[in-house]
Image (cartoon, one colour):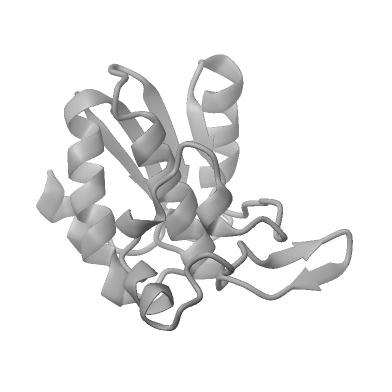
Length: 152
C-alpha cells in the first residue's frame, strides 16, 4: 500500500486539496481541527481500547482512567478532559483500531502531527507504518518532513 505525503507552508492549499480528495473518493478523513463530544468518558467510547494510547497509563496510575472525559468545547461550553494533542492522538488511534480488520482503504490525514508533542511523534510514525501495510494513506503537513522522508 502507499503513503503519499504533501508538504507545504500554511495557506498553500493543503486542506483544500484533502477536502477535494474526500469529496471525490470514499475515504476515512481525519481533519486538522476535530470535534468530538467532550462529555464522553474515553473509557466508554464504543469499540475502542484506550490502553493503547501512549499516555493512558498516567490516568490509570492516577485512578482517573474510568472518569477522564474527551474534553474540549461544544456550543461554547468547555468540558475539562484531554488536551487538544491528546484528543488528536485519540482520534488517530481510534481510526487505527477501527480499520485493523479492513484492507485497502484510503485514509486522509490533515496535519496529523499538529498540536501533538514531539514525544508522541514516534508513536504516530509506528502506527502510520502499521496502517500503510493495509491501507493507502494521504497525509498533508507543514512539519516533520524529515521524519516522513525517513519513512519512505
